[in-house]
Length: 196
Image (cartoon, rainbow, N blue to C red; front, side):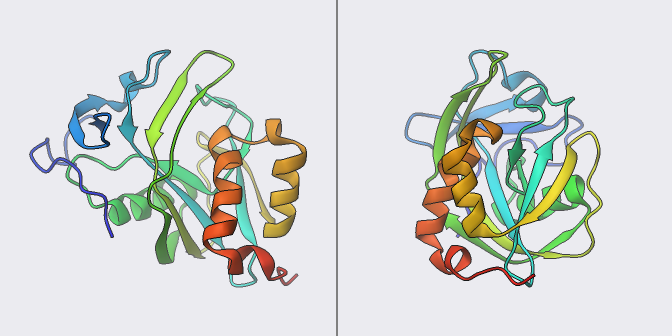
């Protein structure tokens, strides 16, 4: 299932990156420049989040680059992003995996289609997103972009749940909210011990 975006908006080849704005019913209501949308009064917009696993059942954690405007240096899921207006959500997820981590994704599945959140960074920047959560398997060797990711770690999924419960401040707020929901939605990913 793909979340529809406003097909009448400019195509994804537009010279500047645009995000899809949403109304209170989570329907497309316009577009805005990505560079200008994240402020102290961020409007509700469409995004996505992806959790990647490897063949051994481990989950990929990434640490956000220190140059990030919001939540720099915190640990989070593999990657997040925004679909371009008119872009299918799964295409956007694959595009972002390649851009941030230099890898492909297989077995992509939407695990939490209705996830939405609002969070305020210490700097005052607000995230306000309808953010479907995907899971997938990594396909390739990680080559993270240093302007996006400063560190990576493969972790036991059950251990991640313990860490989120014990030290939530070390993780992004969306990661903290998603982790228990994802464990309930796809328990097989979190109950089987990861092979070392």
